[in-house]
Length: 400
Image (cartoon, rainbow, N blue to C red; front, side, top):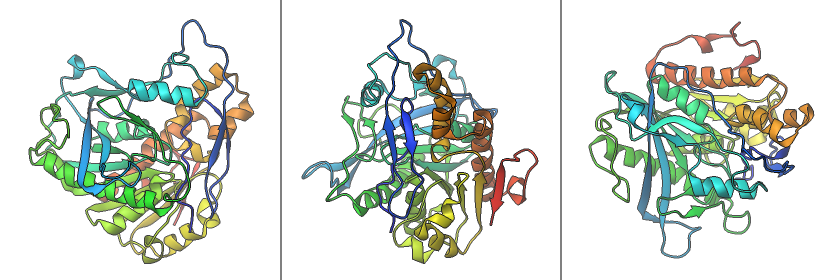
């Protein structure tokens, strides 16, 4: 079985040496090569979504009082942070949310060897607390699970594209498996590999997903699941169509998706972005739609558990392989790494180690188009991009 500690390529400001996942592990090692801090720190940016809807966002602090956290010490209930991103209206009066909240951002820069203020991390395009746009009625819901050592905002480009086109997207921070900041200012990092981690991490990820779905049900019925009782945006009650739920995940988020689908039939369709498979679902398979997005290398054939899982899928399935990209390309790093390259004086070869040789704009286009096409097909019953090769995306190969 693949090691559950599949490390997400989330370090955006470091020179990476990427090892393609194997049956034992898929880890990315980073070293830092920072230039001296400039007088005016550069501002990193993310591209705006292309859909017609402006975006609202809200973060929720959730506490699962039925479950003790195995990594938090004796007697501590499991705590999570999630964000909802959704079509909104009248957004001008509401500030946009940062890509990372301030204390988590400062810790993130420190762990990458950069002093606070060396660079300004991106802002999102989601307006905090903006009222939801209800003109389209109930909207399908998509969950997002990040990779190991990552955070819920690491795939903001894909999340915002989906939300701008009529989805409510819930992104999950799996506490002690990434960097998360709580409303009281606590910043919690990942637990180290070793005794007591292993499959336990995935068990927590799966339970997190089921708990988040339960809390979204509370929210849709008019309740406020936030543990601190913070005010919710207007219009969320009755907005979520929880009969149409999909889920996607990057790296370790991939096996989280497959295993959560195995244990919770509320998830109707699953997408893994360069993620393997692990746990009972490998041999049991699934009978619901599943799509895998992989890099240039035939990762599906190199990981025995993933190959077994694929052979046991009984429903609709498709492998989207993008030429010229690397494992770390399936996330915001695809657009941020070129900006960091100038700051850190990376060579073209060093940048290619991060995100491959495909032009970042093309990688971004693939990220926007194919997850949207997958969820449109299986949650809305529309679209034809996945029917076969597309001249719009010559870098993409469809593998049954």
